[in-house]
Length: 443
Image 1 (cartoon, rainbow, N blue to C red):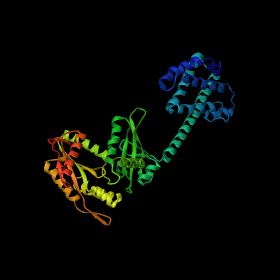
Image 2: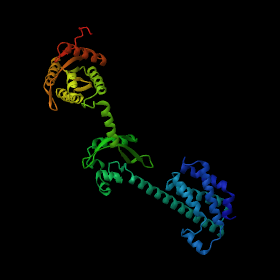
Image 3: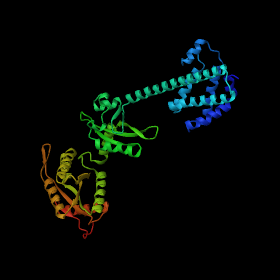
């Protein structure tokens, strides 16, 4: 029996023998049915090839591994190589697949023949040549597909506006794309082989910690960070560092990708500014003041610290507004805000609540006299003459003061108490401050 006929007649035993060997190679990459279908197609293609007569020149070419112009294995082998690459097989696994087929056919046919004559040996030689040739063609198509994918991927990454780079375990750059090169204002060849932490940016400690986290956990790390280019321009990036594993599951490198979110960050900051600051005076508005007051209360509870809340109204502001107009009133409010802020520390808060109403949070105070000194300073500054364009105006202020925690710990209650003290100051002649007295009935 010729080998071509043996293969066709014994497809099932050959496949079973091959399967027993191959299942240790491919694990769970493919289902049994898909593996069998692929092996069966390859065997039938080889059987047809063995059945064809060969000229002397064809035999010589075949023995040298040269592909024939119209070789029947060509299309099947190329398709198989492409398919195996797309299925995630390695080149070693692809080679092992053909080795398993070779071993299965050779073993079973040897058992069946017992003794081989010259014709049988010739068939076996042709079979091995066919296996070698179809393997070469599969490897060629596998490699071509892989190279094509690498070119496509490299082009995509290189042309991406996002920063893409790869570093080894010591932080040495192995790859940078064009966007990365442009940001650092260095050609790629001048960056490769250098430690990424030493490229001159100020985020080195944070970057080292993030990359070390990837190495320690084997998990991706992401977040956002500020970056200053060599020209001094400020950028904001959101980033992700992803571990690259070798075939043994060990981290061999880290891939970094960073996206420029500068415009988005600036827009977010602008929206936050609009939402939390008074457009006229640039002081915190009611919303941000409420948050600062909550934080002050929490700090007082946590660290056993005192703070004072001052509620302030400008005296005679309405007369200025009516006489000189709203534009002049706005200028007066701006100047008043500047003077009040100059009377307190950076750690304190001055807010405009609306109209001519201001509030002040004096944090971490010691004695009540400290608050009185600040209140006197504010009154003194606001009693000084204001110049609005070509006009000079005189105003004063009334201030109500409440203390936390001795007067309470609830924001609404503290505001109500400061307002009560403010009304007492106004009713007592204005241009003065009053400290909230819990023993005085509220009106």
